[in-house]
Length: 97
Image 1: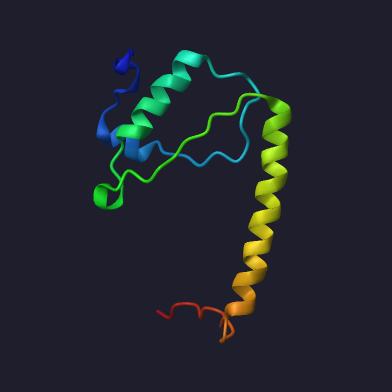
Image 2 (image 1 turned 180 degrees about the vertical axis):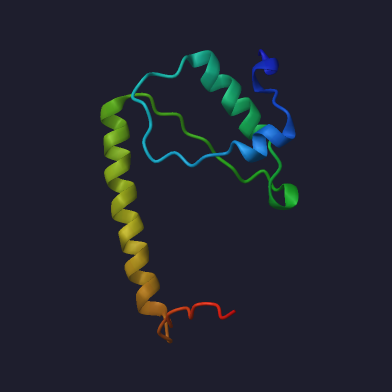
């Protein structure tokens, strides 16, 4: 594995972090997927429990199927979360100066 491809100064990593809402449809080379998975497996986690599991799906039809299942589960969980609440959320007041 070419680990040098993942090196970056800490400050650059922190200050250039971005959230991605839209991703390109370009396929990711298999070597890059393997490198990303190797880094993910070795990343620190809470209590060092190694609970993470990874599933790589490259078939576009399967990705759409997983997406539909995920959205359905996400909305079902939100509905359950709302049922379990006993108090109503209060709007935040703006800070005073």
